Length: 531
Image 1 (cartoon, rainbow, N blue to C red):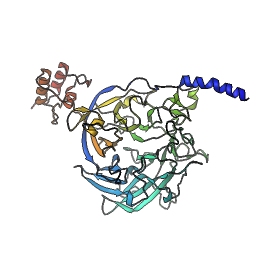
Image 2 (cartoon, rainbow, N blue to C red; image 1 turned 180 degrees about the horizontal axis):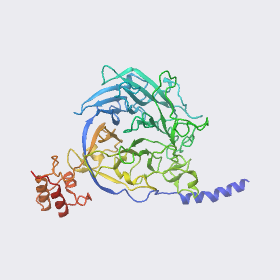
Image 3 (spheres, rainbow, N blue to C red; image 1 turned 30 degrees about the vertical axis):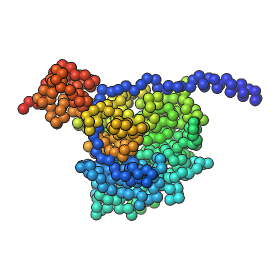
C-alpha cells in the first residue's frame, strides 16, 4: 500500500503543477471613458497614539435627515456639517473596552435604524456600532472555533441618542447585541447596515445585515494556509458569513435580538446550522451596499487571499464558495498562492460566482466595495457601480445594468480630476502630492442625497465624487454662450482646456474619450440656454 500511495502522489503532483494558474484573469483593466471631479471635504483631526497619531476614517453614512456621520477606526464618530466642520457624536474609548490602533481592529462600522427619526417607534433614536473589544470584556455569544486562539471579540452595540441633545449619544444607553470571538487580528465584522429606501411594511425593513469575515489568517511568509479552521463552509460558525438579525428587543423580551423567520436556516430544524446566517462562503466581505434604484440589488465585495478580488450580488442562502473557491477558481488549502481551473463537476456544488473579478498582476490587492450612483447631477454617472481597490487606490466603474447576467461583467478605471488643480491624477497622486502615496486605504461612503465619497485612511481624508456636468465647460452651473465660445476657441486652437473642461466639452456621441470634435460643437449648440 505504501508503494501505491507514493506512486499516486508522484502521478498527481505534476498534474496539479501543470494546472496551476499564474495569470488567473488575463488582460488588463482598461482606462474608462468616464471622469469625475474629486473634491476634498474634510481631513479628520489626529486621534491615534503617539506612534500612530493620524485618524483612520472608515466610512461616511447619513442618518435619514440629511446629516452626515463619519466613523474613525480609533473609536470616534463625528457629525460632519454642511460647512465641513466636525463635532464628536460618540467616543467609544470612554464608553467601551475598545481595541484600536492595531491593524484591522477598532471601530469598523456605524448604522442608524431606519426608524431613527420616527417618534414613538422602538427604533427611534437608535444607533449601532461594531467594534473590536477585548476578549476579557465579556463572554462571546459565539466563541472561536475549537482549537483556535482568541485575539479579541467583534461586538455590536446599540446606543440611544440623547433626548435632550440630538447631536450626542447617551453613553449610559449602551446595550450589547452580539459578540463573536475572533481567532486572529483581521477579518472581523467589517460592516453593519440596514436596507435603504424600503417601506416599513417590507419584510426586510429594520433588519440588520452583518458582514462577518472568516476570522483571519494563520501562518505567514511566504505562504499561509487558507481558512485554517474551515469556517467558510461551516454552517455552525458565524465566521465567513453575512448574518441578518432584528436588533430591536420586543417589549419584555429577554433575547438581545431576534432572528427573521425568512433566514434560510431559521426553520430548517437542524441545531447544527445557525439561524442568523443569511449567506455564506465569504472570506472578508469588507463592504456591501444596495442599489437605491434600478433592480435594487445588493452588492458584496469580498477581499481575496492572494489571487482574486470579487464583487458579488447578494442573495439569500447563496454560497459564494470560500474557502473551496476564490473567485471562479479552485483553491489549494495548504498554499494560498495557488489557484486552479474549476473541476468538471463544479456545477454540482451550486456556488454563486462573482459578477466582477480581477487578479493582482496590476498592483491591485484588496477590493473595496462602493455604491451605484443614483444622484441627479450627471446622466453619464447615473447607474454606474463605483468601487475600487483599497491598497492601490484605483477607482473603477461598471454599468449596474450589466451586473445581473451570467459570467463577469466588464468594468474600467474611473478617471479622477483633482479638484485642487483641475488635472487628471491617480488617487495616490491626489493624496501624496508631488510624491504619490504608497497606498490609499480606500473606502467609500454615501449620504442621504446619493452623493458618493472616497474615504482614505492614508491621509485621514473624506473626498466627494462630483460628476462633471456635460456641456457646462466652464463649470459655472449653466450651459450658455460662454461655454459655446470656450469650445469654439478650443477647436480653433486658441484656448487650452484643462482636464475637467475637456471632459465636460466631450458631448457627442457621449463617448467621453477626451477628444473634441465638430460633432461636440454641434451637440453643445442644442444644449445652450439662450439669454
